[in-house]
Length: 135
Image (cartoon, rainbow, N blue to C red; front, side, top):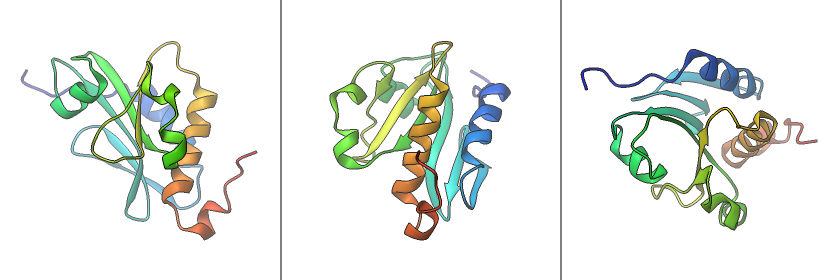
């Protein structure tokens, strides 16, 4: 494959609208895909998988693509819940509290917003996390 896959602009825009609404969050291009940070910590990362690339994500998701996946953090006890080990979720091995989600036409974007706010709060300084409305 000559070029690596890109995440659809509409998905990046939708995630940006959620993530950049969090205190002091910022966005950058990652080695692949786009990630959202608080300080120097990555609380969300969206990646497109195609033809088995990137291999770590294809292996974690159990799918060679085409597939768009979002990774985020949860409190350890919540990340260990059985629901996060079943599709559309998956558990990458590189951080114990990291959860992946395959994004598709059936994605519940309200749930995504809640999960990303929770991810942000796991990694943000307490002062910033306290500013998040988790209503």
